[in-house]
Image (cartoon, rainbow, N blue to C red):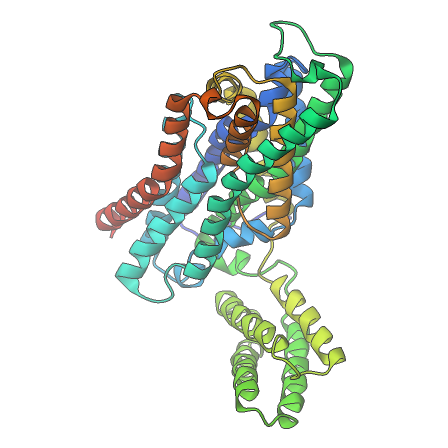
Length: 462
């Protein structure tokens, strides 16, 4: 079966869609320069693995991380934009939006990579999405940017580097007290591999960072890829390919019946107001479902509305009995599967793009991580500690569906290990200022760049 049908588009539209999908893969390829290089920095810098072996090893575990990581983070990226509104916009509008996001993200990523700055691809993508979302709202109104989701993402991106720094400081202090063999605290000797037990530790931490990087950061590319597909081919990607209108109608009737019965037993006006939102959503959705699957974007929008209100109702104390509450929670999760998905081939393409980017562009960032954050070179213990903290932070973020920056988490963890070794004087201020500047500037620059490009493209092609 074909992955998608281009016959619904004009020849120019089909060519543009293919171009944009390739551009998303190019963004992930550039992302490999930045973020995935962090996973192999310590094993390459400490001569634990040869570069070719390290990047292939990292690529394999990035792939496994994306495959097994679900789509929670990817859908968080999708939810930043009013995709439902964008799916019904004219073709030139869709093309302008996607072109602005991709061009802004690639320009910033390439520029920071060229100067060897560990900039965040996560900040870059999110800033670019926010930029077009803000301008879209300014022009069309509607839902605009999902500021609730944007706030959640911003907090994750802001908090994670500080956590990485302080956690690494503590772990370095703890390891220094616990480990009697001080060989692990030595700097790598040029051209000489460390003892096998140290190599095993460093390879393990590299593997963990690679796997959890794939489970979190790889999903951002998946989310961006799905945005392009949904905006250009809403009839094919607004809902899961296995979507069953008849089966869903039965489920919606079940929700309506259960909520209606619970309302009759309630005297609280507040509780009934919450449930009334569910009943209104089921009524609207039933109208669409009775027509089959003709209006998939419309069904998607009403499904999201129903799911939101149903989840809210399950949190209202003493509204449902225990059995009904658990059943409604399960139904809410099942409803989300109809629109929160990514085809396996999308995940595979993103994984390959990340891995190839790592193999080609890793060297500049490896040098920055290993030699330029601290005044002394990175020791074995510092490399292992930084990657252990980074992998744990990314893993927790993935569990909570929060995108974080591998670059900033690892860079801050390396800085934390440097402080633990010789205090703040052990940091290279010029490098930290450069990294901090990129951290501060990435969001506003990409917001302005993508928003400006969207307005420009829209003016040109309208």
